[in-house]
Image 1 (cartoon, helix red, strand yellow):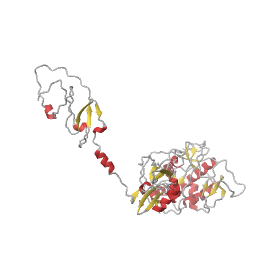
Image 2 (cartoon, one colour):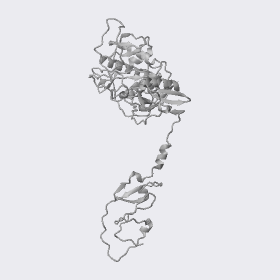
Image 3 (tube, one colour):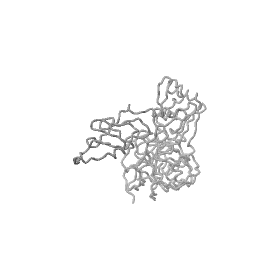
Image 4 (tube, one colour):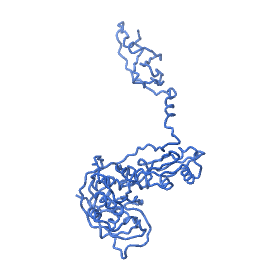
Length: 470
């Protein structure tokens, strides 16, 4: 076979140009439609004619010696352009789409949006921080959630009573210490921002409680030198929630944190079952229109966070109208403990299976319990849940004073604290790089169910005097 030297031959491996598999695609070479998928070579000629020689034929082209070889031309790289979409055979894509998940209207689980959220999983080394001070000379006024009364107590008795109410004395001492630091941090934060905190008070606390509180007395958590809003809840759905997702305020230390042991919580996977007719009645009363005849359209989860926590759900009516309700609405309508839930339908009944209890932000009390049982110290637990915070010894709270009359008066209720450190307090630096080597696990037998949660007020933070710990 003889080929003129003026004809440029470009041989391109089919594997480098097209995806082998029978797609009827096309590649435009230098603006010209050269070849469709399935050929083994691509040729482009100056006169726009296309050769169809094989690779072997091209290799066997004879070389003539009638005239000396001219200086070879410098060839530019071929410019590849994407073919128009109509050139491609997309029928197989349409077939695949059509065969994707078709929900059985008699047995289905409502799908969540894809979860691509980042999270923290911090495991610092123990600090060995032992500085303490007495807080018995500080007095705080709080609302007792058990009696509804407003009481004023010295801080030592108040923290002992609150911790005893929250988790009892049956958990590991490291867990009790972590709860004590979080509770005092909250107390200080709320007091310094003029917030009347609501806590549970359980008097006649045990020697175990007092020993643990005394071991960490006066210690608080700081972020950038300021006492934090150290909120906590009974448990999470496997990840704590960021404050911005729950309350809208963005506390940088209240982020999404992995809480691996929360599946051991008794509040994990609690089912609430309602009949189809009951759910229909509740929803129609809420949204004000008749629901779709297609039961699979009654709940569409449009926004979620921290895995299973529902932010918004769309309800669809029989004429195509829609309404959006919140995760809080779902809890209120169906008597659920958590925004984190699975929704399924089978045999004419809806099942709402919830995970965790409470808002899920900050420290998980059940997570704290099991991390302590796995060998974590109280400061490791606190630095795990409160991101980039430091443990410090607080200063004396000067605005507190002993009451002239005991225990009670009426007052407005308000939720939760933030805090301030002490003159001469210095935070111990902590690393926030995750370390997944948590030791494993003896199962504790807690003596008390934690209170569901504490919820923060969104307040500006105040300056704090601090001193670095050596």
